[in-house]
Image (cartoon, rainbow, N blue to C red):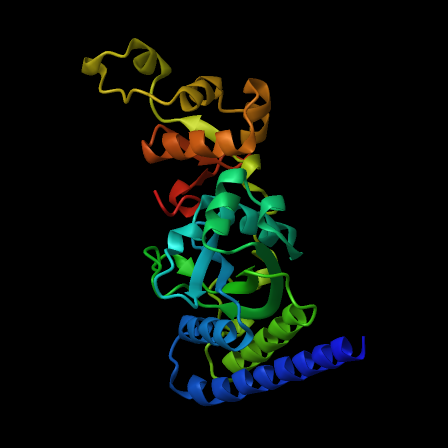
Length: 308
């Protein structure tokens, strides 16, 4: 019993040393950084190496001049350079994180089997990633647009709302998440002092309190058809209509009435979440449907399925 306590104390001291090392190095490295995403990428790799976290993702909300908001993956860092990033950079993880950003909450460490679909959980465990957790961070500072954002001309500085997604091989040490959160809070303070985060007065949208992300989940959006249902049913090559070869996608498409939300449609035709996601990806990829907010405002579907 005494030896176990000594081991725990030693591990706690080591985590404390690693935390100090990361923050000290960041103070030095940040002098030459020109964009917040440089800091995020360096920090993610450093946390992974020092604290033995195999995969880390940093997600944030991004606002656009159109009034839309999206959940953006800013960086993914893996300790294994051969790790295929699509194992974690996909719609399954994206949807889970997007819901947490909307709820402004994190998730305590848990088995991937209890979090993701069986297929996604099997994929993660095949790469020896058995546990997942997510931290939530927010600040009144404004986060610049992604360096790699294709819509950077429409993106505007956004009140910092972030989710930190963590995948590990083993059960989380109780001190790991508080330590990482402490490091990130220090990092945001350093970033603000270095000018990598903006002040509220720098925002072209004015007071961010008037521009908070709409508290809509993905499943509360309303699909609309972009092609005539008569043309689809005719299956006539002269109509230029795209055939829907996927059975569940076809079933979902014909249920769309421009009024029901994704959840309501799924319930009406008795599809589970995984089946709905697959059907939506199929239809969005072929541009057979568009997604709208309940007030009728169209959403850019590519903001939800980046991999399409």
